[in-house]
Structures are given as C-alpha cells and as structure tokens.
Amino acid sequence: MASHTAHCEFTIKAPEFAYAHLEQHIDDSGQPVALDELLARSYCASALQQYLGDTGAGIPLDILKVEGRQCWVRMPRDDLRAFAAALTAYRGSVAEGDGTPFLLRIKQCSDWLGTLLGSDALDNLWQG
Image (cartoon, rainbow, N blue to C red):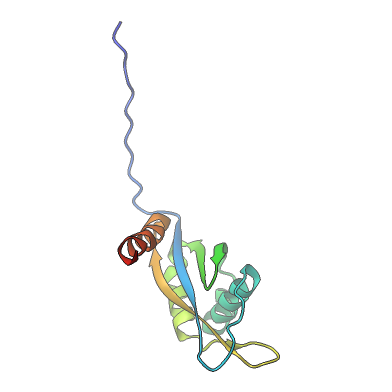
C-alpha cells in the first residue's frame, strides 16, 4: 500500500502582534536601577501616557521577559509605531531616593519574535 502524506501551506501576511527588544540605559553618574517586569511596564505606560494621553495608556502591552538590563515586549502590530515614537520621545524617569536617571531604549522592533531573538544568538556567535 502506498502511503499518502498530506502537505499544507499557508502564509501569514499580517501578524497580529509586534515585538520590541528594550535595553536599560545606564548613566555613569549613578547606580543602575534593577529592572523588573513592574518597572518595565510602568516605564512604558508612562511614556505612552505622556506621548498619546489616554489613547496611549490604553495600548495593551505584555512584558514577555526581563533579563538583566534587557526586556522583550509584545503589543498589537498596529501600535508599534506609536510605541516606538513614545519611547524615543520620553525623557525617562528618576529613581526614588537617590535620583538615579532611568531610561529604556529600543534596541530592535519586529513583527516576528524570532528575528529579535535570532540576532542576539548571531551576536553571541561572533563574540565568542
């Protein structure tokens, strides 16, 4: 008997989500603030609120991972431009107590999470 293998193809033209890889900017003048999920979400929400008002505050964000000074964020694909503009325009915040400046900067953005993660692996390959 001959076996039949079903083969199915499909194309995703417009993914539902977009992803951003953020990195904490460290100022030489002070001790870096420990980055966690709550701080990353609060920072992004403040930037969106300042840039777009209540519309920006309503953009749903998912903090996917925080590792050291870096974090990965997921948002609706249509909101990526507004998110990138808000974070770029935001001056940052100051940590309570010692007044250490706190900034998150966009390292990369993409419609595909794999492209963000793959570029880090590529960097590690050549760095050692």
